[in-house]
Length: 461
Image (cartoon, rainbow, N blue to C red; front, side):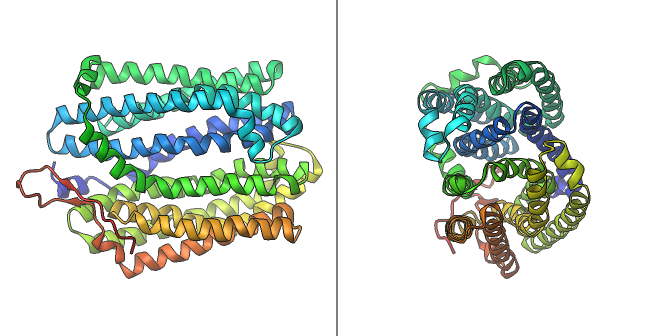
């Protein structure tokens, strides 16, 4: 299908709503653990939040392969090269499994030292250690699920992912309700792993009955070195900005952990769970916009791409404003879902108000960074992340929370400053149009066929 025909069938809503539902269900999988654990023990719920920060860092490795394989599979299918698409699919599954097993072994052996490195101690370390050893020790299941889901989506079976996500959430909730009262954090971890195992099996059955044959792995003999190299070239720049952000959050946690009171630490976990709802729409709009901008820039329609980016940004800001307003008005009942501790409720209520400023910057970043990635401008967001994440977010958190003694409030101010400054930089970048010359897909390939040539831009300006 030609680019113009494809774009006629695309609009922001049709692309964003399936992504919204799938992402919401995925986020709910983690929130359910925290919510049910909060009824068991507030500190146990906080421990799960701390452990999941460590997990989020290593999943960046999976995202590198997933991002690259999504681009390659879609390009090969568009060019009619079905065998190459199958080879890329097989390679992504094998690589994800291998990296997943290595990381799982690392978590099994070093989960306590890793948690101690970020400042976790006492009963919090015991709770987090038990959870991380189980969930981290079976992270290879998540790796394989990530690989298979990318393949399924790029073959057009997007609704299947929503159904699988819904089923996993229902199962996870049922298992949590049964296991957490009896086993605490161990039960929550076991429920998560069981859901991942069942989800992985379901996706594998779908993959090998509807899309590929198990014999597809024979295409990896001899090993496709060129395909692997292309994965790294495409995936690493796109994932670095996200990696730096998550790493900075982990460093911030280790810096401020010892200066936060137990109630502030608990409030931090609950607020982060609640505010996921605030930026979920922006995340979906950003991912949908990335697809649209990629098609438009690839077709040479850079002016239309610019206008689409502005429309997406405005839409996301409007939805964010509505969501934050509702969240602020309903913050009492929302916090009450997690705890009735009056001090925790008071801190959470204040932070949710302060978080509205942070969401203004975060919405701009989620949408415009995705647009720039779609246009091929992958280095500028990374350069901004190095500057802003570490100078404003990390150093700012230390100064505000530790030096000035403002605790969780100081940390949130620093986080908001980081998001807003980066948001301003992204907005200026998009308006000035420096991204117009950074596209990585060249439709005018020398062979004159539909095959595209991927060329990575190596300057950061």
